[in-house]
Amino acid sequence: MTRPDFRASGGDACRRHGLAMAVLGALVGVMVAVTVFPFPAFAHEERNEGYYTVLDEDRREIFMTAIMVAPGDIFIAEDNRAYEITYLDGDTAHAVFLDVMGPEEESDAGGGRGRALGRALSTAVSALRSVFLGQGAPGKGRTVVLYNTHSDESYAPTSGTSTKDWGDVYRVAATLENALKKQGFRVVRSTANHNPHDGGAYARSRRTMAQLMRQNPIAAFDVHRDAVPPQAYRATVAGEDVTRITLVVGQQNQTRGQNIQFAKQLKAAADRRAPGLIKGILWAQGDYNQDMLGRSVLMEVGAHTSRLDEAERAVDLFASAIGPVLGASAPGVGVARGGVGRAVAWIVGLLVVAGGGYLVANSDNWRKIRTRLAGIGARGLLNLLGLRRRRKR
Image (cartoon, rainbow, N blue to C red; front, side, top):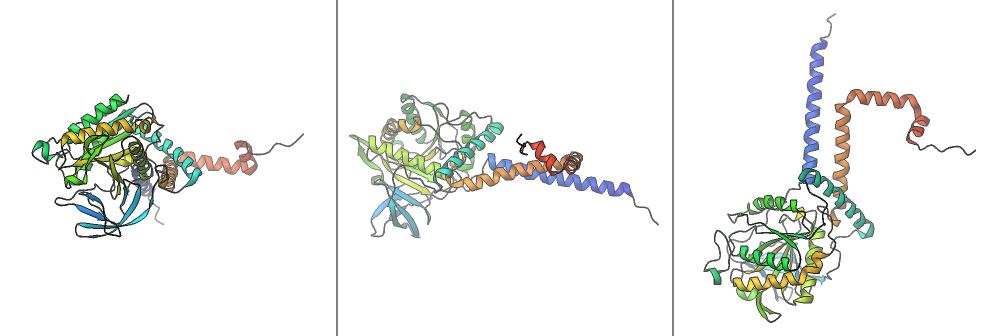
């Protein structure tokens, strides 16, 4: 009889064990990366030429924008009437009226228990972020961060061109910075350039946002300008000639509930202090890097046909109006009220896989644990865990 080659079988076992450990390690790494560093769904782009005109059921114009819109996008107009885009016909987007949205209305269902669980999960994810990104607790302090994803955007009436390497939007962000500082906030503004103006701009500005997140901000603003005719944004607010502002929020991230609620609160505050300043809120397809912070919005400050001084006056008014919103207690980072189930699945899955990987890596200890448990039996296990009732004397 041929004796088995135990050395060969042992080598195969070692290789299989090593492969299993590598797979487990890769799986844990992916889960940590997705939980702590969520990837954007896709970078939302603008039209190269032209713009969309959004019409309601009676073919009345409710909005113009050069942002790529799609069926399912929602626009909350100046009067808080919400419309959903149903189909596109060339440069025309057709929308139907949904409802009047109040500023305090929840954007995702879940009830009180869901909101409480969402806050708990926000804290858990924030803790994971603090381990990997070196961040402190979110919402503490009064730091607001600003940046410009589309670095080339300018105002043609002022600069003679609608685009240049370092666009006028940097001046608008600087004015917003100074105005927020007057309100008592600490402001960190990035002047990083993310050119060219293409589909990769949001991937480049995501790295900027990751750096800004180290400041433990309570809010983030990505400052842009639209590309539509001047009448779409021109207005007189509080006796001043200004450009109006559109707030843009992405639907494709786990913080969409927090993002849209934040935008609605900003609009409500501006409506009280400077009625007519906010043109509306566009809740669009895309991510806009807003998954990194629940209190994060994109601002379209006028259009390329607006004047720079009008845009600067607009953000000055905006900053003076939103102070109470920014000063309120901030929610945690990275988990939306609408994304509780997904967050639970990831966190539980991460713990299970990590624990399984540890037990496999320490198979001798696992065998000892099984032997010990089998020896002590059910009663012994209850005693060991302190779960067995004591007899009354």
